[in-house]
Length: 223
Ligand SMILES: *Cc1c(COP(=O)(O)O)cnc(C)c1O
Image (cartoon, rainbow, N blue to C red; front, side, top):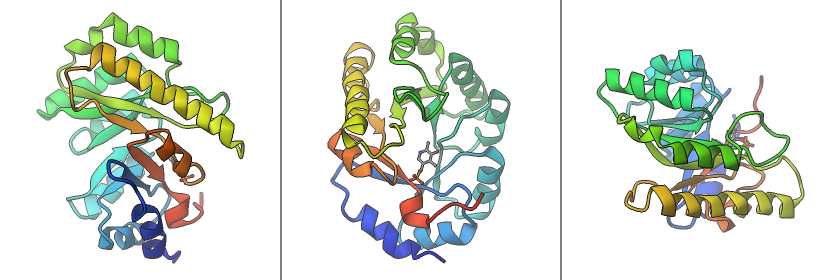
């Protein structure tokens, strides 16, 4: 096995206060997650519903699971009973469905709105302008079983640090705008989820509160 314990500490032990590590364990077997768990890691991120459900049913119950991938509305019902955060909400339709399924379980599910800032990496997420419009329209305020906790984004997959920094700064500035306009009285709107294996140090400089690191901890994924 990849030296999960050493790698985990390398990432985690240097994090400034206020930045949490989400260990992205997609495509890795339970024993890899257990190795991280045994070193104290409790938050894991997965991007496929079936894989997540299989892991959640067999691994320790005090793990907080984050769903980080594109979530189809017809899959929400399977994870609604236990998911801790759904990070990549990319449509109002999905937000409504999460609300509906959360209500069935008498829960409030924390979510992040996914921004689409990088040009090439993903076809999902709101353009800044679309996200503004969604928040301005205000229908989300009626959804009592979802709580919008912040914003999430993926920067371009590039070696150009200035490009990455530019995108993350845009996200951080937009966070400030949204916080002031819609969530000034909600201390729990506070999360800025950006930074992956190749760019998390930049993300921390750009005020990330949650880095999502997979490869640097668990090694390459075998698809
Ligand atoms: C896979 C994934 C990550 C982790 O990427 P690494 O490069 O392995 O650290 C982070 N965020 C999202 C949304 C992902 O899909």
